[in-house]
Length: 272
Ligand SMILES: C[S@@+](CC[C@H](N)C(=O)[O-])C[C@H]1O[C@@H](n2cnc3c(N)ncnc32)[C@H](O)[C@@H]1O
Image (tube, rainbow, N blue to C red; front, side, top):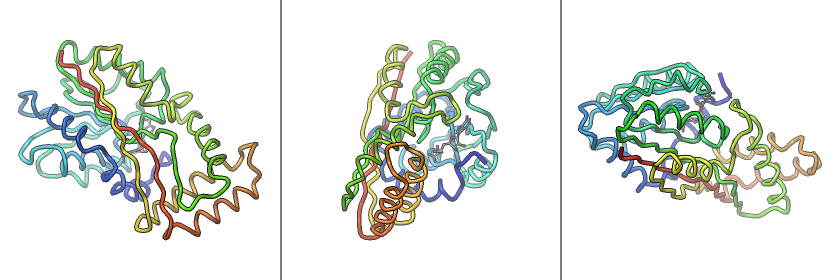
């Protein structure tokens, strides 16, 4: 276990799928399918239970398009779950691997690298090392990178609570603490990755992909609220009793209120 349970990833999958920018997804899928290979290779970093694999199956690829997906994660339970949910058309290979070992990533013949809800957890040096590996592995071949659902630091609640802004600032601070890769990029992830990829010769597009959550998502919202409260609980600028109040207020409104959590999707393509 790494802290991302099958239950949590299942809970967020529908909201993620709805949030992903459909145009970037379509362009990414078209790029992957247009290489002329009989089996395009897609490498999914931090794949979890395979949410990105399933999204491409449902919304991206032409139904008959064959591809091999190399799903990489350090959590073997999540990978096993992903393998169980493979379809008949796209082959899955799983790799239990710590992404920090970038030189071990199976990037041979890769056409598209994907990641979702991952790049806000990683550090700037990790991104630099990853791009250098992709560069070396693609050596003159067209290659793309699709990174969806990068948290952008914004969250808006309805109804509002006086502590929302303070809690958000504390939460965003927590988002930049080490999540296993060194100091995390957190809300700066997309800007950093975009600039690094542009320096490496990629054309990069960004698009917003916010979670728009309401009463029907109450279970996900309740988990989100608990996660935020726990992330800020030892922040020096918020008294514990204020966090308790905020938490109680937020939980009391999960079925009647709404919430927007900002994300950005990124697609980068280098034609040669
Ligand atoms: C927020 S989850 C996203 C999972 C999946 N991409 C999705 O959208 O549902 C982050 C994933 O990254 C994986 N992960 C985190 N740190 C990792 C590391 N150092 N090496 C490999 N996988 C890692 C976790 O196990 C988890 O599956």
